[in-house]
Image 1 (tube, rainbow, N blue to C red):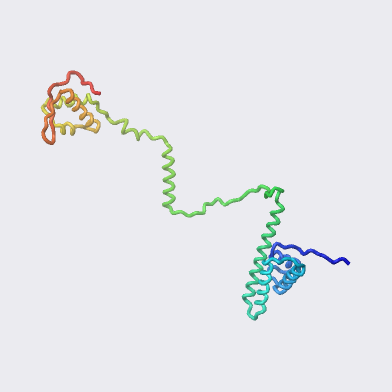
Image 2: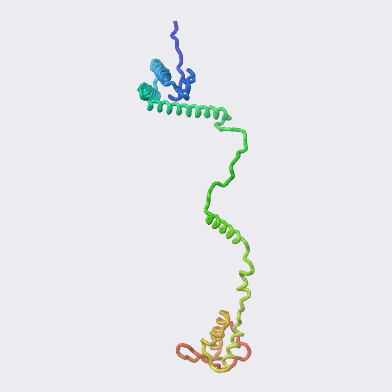
Length: 241
């Protein structure tokens, strides 16, 4: 008579084996009968060892865990054992959910290790959730307004001071200084102080240099200041470069 041979199911880990036993014997995963589960689990481990199959360490570790929970449950006060049983139940529920999700994903592959699904509309809450200080919002608004204004061309009013500023010609200032010197000598500071603007002051200084260069005036040193004395009036207009 031929020897009867059979193959033991292969499980990915102790959790996979526990789920198989719970499903096979119709146990309540939310309220595991620990005594029955320990008996079935140890029987399966002994079956694997009888067939000379290598039992992984994590299966043996789970066996020790189940025996520990069973031992605590035999005590008169077994709150710790009950707590460990509930923890094991929660782990099994989570593992079962992950396994179901993995199976669902495997059914959606298209043969190229890619997951596919029909396109769908994603609803999102577009409400802004952050809370800001009012001053922070004001500063952000002012910065945004400033950036917008920087992109605009400059207004005419920005150039008005440059366009409308009076520019005094040196030749015009020469005639004015000559008229002042016709009444007698004048100090350099008096001539400069009579200027009405910065442009007028620069033109006065250049006019004095031109008159001194062409020897139309005589410069007399008075210590901290110096005076100008008219020697001769220019004939026509002096050329000024």
